[in-house]
Amino acid sequence: MVESLMYLMIGSCPDIGFAIVKLAQQMANSSNGHYQAGLHLYRYLLNTCKYQIVYDGLSNESIVAHSDSDWVQDPESCKSVTSYFTLIAQGVIF
Image 1 (tube, rainbow, N blue to C red):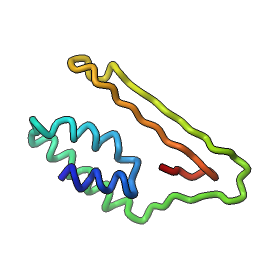
Image 2: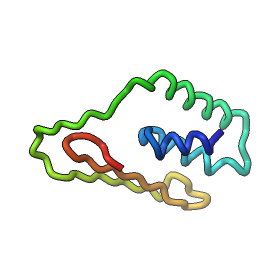
Image 3: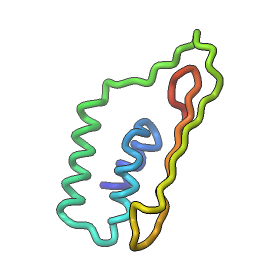
């Protein structure tokens, strides 16, 4: 299940990235709760499949990049969680 969600995340849905990474970290020791979270993501994707990224070709904005990282979220393993996104013409690019 997580593999197909990762494919969707890379190809078209960057907004599910954080949830996918957290589910992938639990694959070795998954539970019914993780399965339910995966199903929740599928339902989210079904309900938002008509959403689009719109680029404003008339905007004068240059490239804008935002990033965030977190080392404290998992105090046992201290694995970092990093995320970023870039905007061109007020639309997200990868």
